Length: 393
Image (cartoon, rainbow, N blue to C red):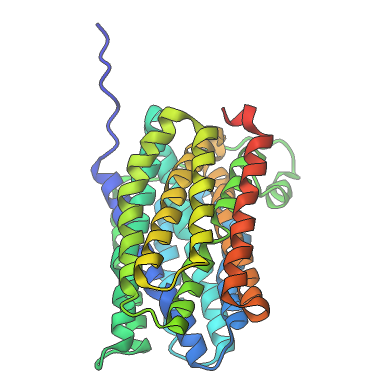
């Protein structure tokens, strides 16, 4: 009788990969509440906050497909190491209290973020068992985002502590990036890269690779992830500013709740997505996110904020695991680095666009108008899911 035991997900290399990604996300979530408060401390408006968020997202988006080609031709783990080091360098520039420097620093961080993601996603797609991709993506994404449990709250505590301040938060973020680089370097010793062979069809191949950096095989998954992620700045960076405006105290607990939700929800809901299918999972995801965003319109205290965040991030958990599994299924094996890099660029694109729109909406309509706008934008995912229902089934 043939064995039905499922292929194992966890290995030493997978643990190193997840740990390095955790540290990379930890530095990011340390800066996520810090930078908006720092920019407004320097005299910037909510729209300026949105511009600085876009300065992180746009370079991450533009460079990611090219970095994906580099992943295929050089080293997945090597690109990940360089990504961590560039994020540390960008954080170092944040010590200069000038808005223009902050924009450049966040752009450098964005390029490093692209390298960390492109290398990590390619390694995930290579190592995940074919029949457990949703679950593997759930563990991977859950561990990444579990940094939300402690690090935003710790950052807020450090900023307000007598011995702390913004500079101390920057030092913590840099340290986390450097630790992530060391683990990624150890991972490179565990999984040596085998360069993939690319057929040379003509002398024009090099410029075709430059022009056709986006892999169309994962276009649908990328568009859906864009819709799913566009509201992220409104429930993180801008919600920190809103909570201060309406006087919600101990707001760090909000990040603890959404971090726990992400950590537990992504692996468990990743299993659900494998069982009920992609299309139904996306309906659940967009429903939960939209309800969470509408609830933010009614928030007046910490309990309401945590409930809205809980619902939103449950939707994000099941939707993210579903779409990562879909992208891994559609990715061309010999171009997996480029495929996964192309797919993952929808996250910085959506966050950049969402950050700009959210900042502009706050300046024009206030925070209530911003939450309403992002809820409507999130609900647009239902249209895309319905249109391509047969393909998603």
